[in-house]
Length: 223
Image (tube, rainbow, N blue to C red):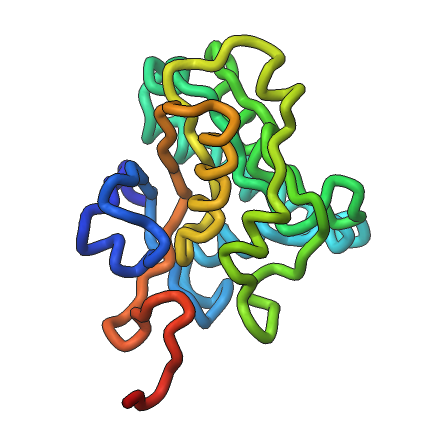
């Protein structure tokens, strides 16, 4: 993975739910399609996303996931300064499963906590999915922005547990369309109006020119 990369206007064309006013960074590029065969970053992400029920039954996969968490944490720690870490409240973008689901995965919070030990870091699981959803890439049709927004909720107790830092930093492993970032940002702004919110991602999915389209736009010829 490379050093921290700010998403400029060109990069944002791969993530159509992001706007020019969004401050987002990533550490690398994820190649969509080949899965773990797509290179070291893809392999890291595949191991990181391994479902808890699979990890529970397979010691080898459990070891691979733990190694991925430690590796992602190391890369993140090298990429951001201690001052930046300690000036932000870090909030993982919630996984597709509800907290009560057997496959609820707290991997992002674990990455942040490993990465920022022994800093004075403020990591809060302040967002959650009200209902479990299939991962977007496993659905016949991707979830709409409005449906996702309605499923995401703010953990008010976690958010009010102590004063927030200067910035709110949303954290996720892979940035695809930017839909999850947009819904989480909207939910947080409803509770903390005017908050400075940004996003940091381990990797972003890059698209070819043919793969870029507006959310909801139909493929094929049009009239």
